[in-house]
Length: 580
Image (cartoon, rainbow, N blue to C red; front, side):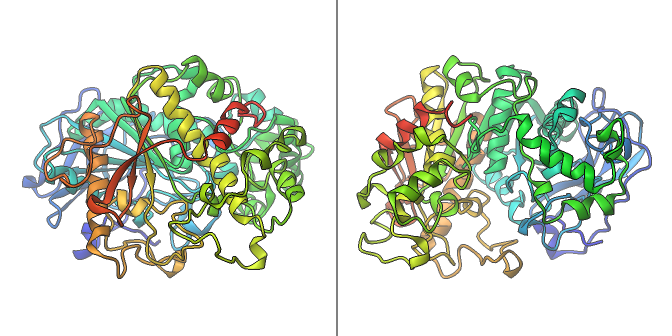
């Protein structure tokens, strides 16, 4: 078993992986007091379902509780079911190493153990604050809902927690796991009929309920939770903001979305679209003749089911409008104000479209065809798609990468296509950027604070033709200046390699701004803030972004949020045509 411990532990003796207990307790914490600090040698918390011991880091003066169960293992009869609360005591539990990742399929899983038994969370708290009620930042990892996990070292929480202490605004960092791919998002008429839809998102929801009941034992304030994620993790934050038609269950007081929004980045598919995929899975696993095919799938041996899913279209399921957790299209909910009205940070990267835009587009006809297909992850009927070339014209100044990164006369490889920059601009907007603007506009219209950003710094290892593409802000937000987790296995290098001090300055500004927002909902007023950087404007005042750019004085500046106005407005106005 290969386990990964928090960064601060890498400098000391390795700790043994915990053995999952044979019995699991209820979502306790009702009567548990604050945990003991590092003075006792081993950090310990007393929950209603048992005593949990963690690990203390003298390097960071932090206490780690890694791999804490928040639900019954979703195995056997609990496979493909909504997550179940812990229902028995477990006595004493050692939370000293990350649990395996939930089963997924993609590069983010390389070198990490995966398992069906994966519903665990991690708590990283600064030592010495055990008897205080600290705010909590809850990280929800990305990976397209098909891969990734909390053990990914790129998501190490030690650095941002340390920054929070340094700026005088200490927070607790938490990261939560959830089921992925088919394991978490299987869909069909049978699934809908059983009420077991969108179970990966329900995993996250149960983790948030667990924190409400238990985080006080760790020294956290359950009334001061911020949910926070990137990409599919940011989309998950958006789903919680709109869940149950925007019902406020008091689970969080703020949200942070990095390249993801309350409105789905994909188009929702009707259940009959998923039915053939479900039926194929039933057939390949020998469940065709079962009266209850979903129950039959629960009892297919793990190795057989995993082999059927791995590398096939049978693992392509995604969230569905189920009339329950996702009651209707979020674009309608935002227009009506049916969302949890808490402050947000919502942003995207300048060149999202180099990750999501199609290649090989040489003619207007091909541009229209791809806009009406699923190649941009959001399809239109052709009657609407014919308008796309008009609202995404060929003027280089409005496309991506922008001329400041790549001259307008730059010649792409022929494989990119003659209309690549137009396709990339549209692809990034339709998947990420337009709905970021739409969300901030909705928050402002309802008088709720929103802070919007555009990340505009190219990290090491990426050419200008790729630009500031998807995911690149993550290392800066986590202040991961040593590039922990960036390696050949993931096809990456340390984003700060051979870069100027402006890059580390920007990481410090962004990480501290995030910590400050988690602490008191204000990303500006913290000790040591870069005096040359302007305050981050509220979107409700002037509809402005802050631009994080290591190539400018103060590594940030404010801008009107007006770029590609016509195209983005068209996308927002046609949200229902995009089925979202």
